[in-house]
Image (cartoon, rainbow, N blue to C red; front, side, top):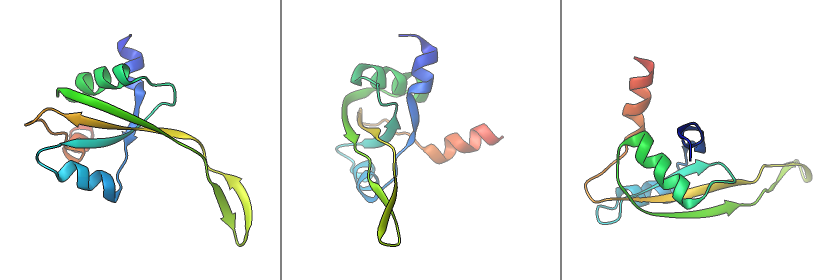
Length: 106
């Protein structure tokens, strides 16, 4: 796997109530990420380890199907399919997305 593909593999963080709750658990540190639809678990693991300098214990993925958007009562258009990954980090490792964004700005 080339580093170029690994750097493009992660689309961004996926922040919901569930992912926030999983990230706050001390014994099971998990983060939610949006990834490319054709990403494999091993590729996601290597990409996270390369980009964030942490150790990954496990990766779980799920494909999210598209949903219809409603315009009033009538369906208008579909949202896109996408894939999310729940990455379990080694105990003691953490990813802080806020500090990463600050480093990019400054």
